[in-house]
Image (cartoon, rainbow, N blue to C red):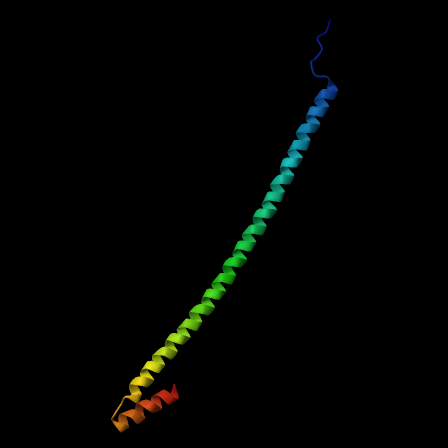
Length: 97
């Protein structure tokens, strides 16, 4: 009398197919996750670049305002000058700027 395996060949085949299917499904999930990760990383980088551009524009604008503010302050001081030759010399410098 020969002992028969508790799992017949069809059972082993089904098990093997199930393992293959699980492996394929997991691989597909991994690929989908990588694509999503890449997409999110790209979106983050684009957002970062947009924010940097916006901040650089704001910095440039504020620097221009500060320079203009300094020029206004200097002009106000020149206008207070009571010595005519000094006033004319300072006014010429302002005009050249």
